[in-house]
Picture (cartoon, rainbow, N blue to C red):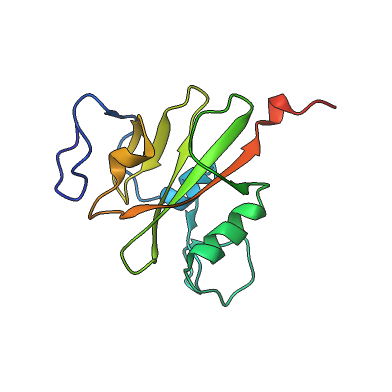
Length: 148
């Protein structure tokens, strides 16, 4: 269990640590399904970004990056069996702070900075002073659900 004032909504019953601490990737990479790259817009040697540089970290920049992964904006984070979802969080100044990904069972997974990966029951579980509030949900079909 994580006890941290930045995450006042994380309670013993609504999350589970699922990995050891690591700094090899961040929450944006984790939301994109990668655990070997640090996703962030900007011109820094350790950053990866799927869009041309220069870019500014705005909500639209993150939305455009996830469009390259076939995600599209959607209404909410409710569970839809055929879709994989991500959520973008912003602080009070609308600066992106975090992303999380919905798992096949409807729970959510987050990488907490350079710390742990966790499973949490809802996007609201990690809202608060640490990551701010939900800005945008996006979804894409699970590969297995696409009929050819």
